[in-house]
Amino acid sequence: MRLILIFTLLAFQSNTADATCGLPHYLGQPKPALAKSNKVTFLTKQLRFSLGMTENNAVSENFALHWGTLPLSEDEVSTMLASAEEALEKFEAMGLPTITGSNEYLINIYVVPTAEDIGGAAGVAWVDSEGYPFMRVNGNLFDTSPGYMEHTIPHELMHLIQLSTNADFNFGSGWLWESTAETATAAVLPEDDFYFAFYGPFAVTPEYPLTSYRFDLADDNPAGSRHYGAGIYFQHLIENENVDELLFRLWSAETIPSSPTDHISSILDEDGLMFDKTVARFAAHQAFYDITNGDELQRRALAYAAATPAYENLSTAFLSSQIGTFFEVTQKTPQRLGYNTIGLEVGVEPRRYLWDGPTGAQATLVVKRFDDITYHPFQESASGAWYADYEFQGDELAMAISVVNLSVVGAARYSIEVAAAGSVPPKSSEPDTSLVVAGGGCNSREETLPSALLLLLILLGLKRGFASNVG
Image 1: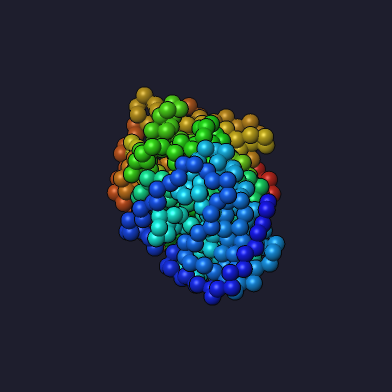
Image 2: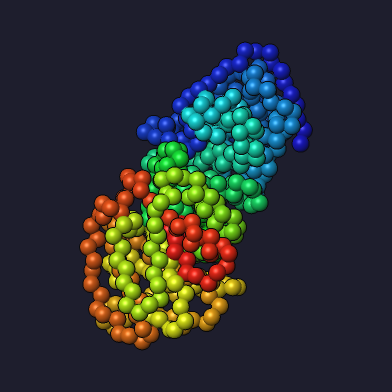
């Protein structure tokens, strides 16, 4: 990479606009009009400034880095520009839209001294007064979070691509912007130490809607940052549902609908897939982290739970294999497009698991063995009840029932009963589906996660069931 340092010897022009990664402070503001793009790529791209000139500047083939008195080393400058060039090359290979103005001008990256200069976050992207997207990043990351700068730049670069489309940015679409920015970053850095860095907040709040979007980075409120971790759903679509060119199809459409779920559904329809069924399978796959880097994601979820004081004394449902065991969910019931994972004890004799829930919810029995994970959707009996039969093989490590709310408004209550194999399921009733206050809907900070002891037993490989609400 050719690197040119340019010293302008001008006073540093600090900008402390109230913006953070996720663009929350721009919610409610219309996205600025974009400049008219030049479709011809210039051999030598021009230097322009989004926030005025700075004391120090460096350029690469496609980017211009600007900073003031912050003491960046030559290696740090090279790292930032190399990260940006690598991400841009991979995004272009995916066929993602061109960033507005990038055929003619260098893409601007402003480095600020601290997170406080950009609202307390690692980076932020927006559109400047002339209609060109640019980003700001926290230069202090090199000291406070080594390696995270290389994660931040691709994430913000994906936002520049999103800002260059006709997509709306609002409370309804914010989760799509942030989650796919993380999925895109994972594509650039599949071995990154910060691979899906916010999976922890997502994993300990599975009952929240997949589409929930709030912004509160407080340590005791994982719901405020789980939308980043929701990118693991799109990773599931790529890996487990075999959806090709997903990011390209999401962000290169000539017109991007205002409803993200409608947009996703239309893409899945093209592949013969149903959105709600993919959500159900995704929820089931989270029971035992059945996805690339699953061990690392599990470690991230457990570490986040252990480091979050609000969670350390909360319990998890765990059902024995004894016939007659009955469990009715009254807390942490899943919101629409949210899910629960209920742990089961590994038994010896064949069992029939009965699930009684509302129309619009779905249950799957998940079994983890030494060498694989199998999925057994509950079947409907002639009487209208739902059940799953299982005959133990002796090599089971853990079991769980995944329950997902696909269309129930509010929270979906349900019950589970352990019965003898072949027992006749009772006729299903429709439990009350009104919002359960104790369940901590979208505005609650009370969450459920596995007990530390149970999780340690799982990690040691003991033959116990796995009770988890960490997906």
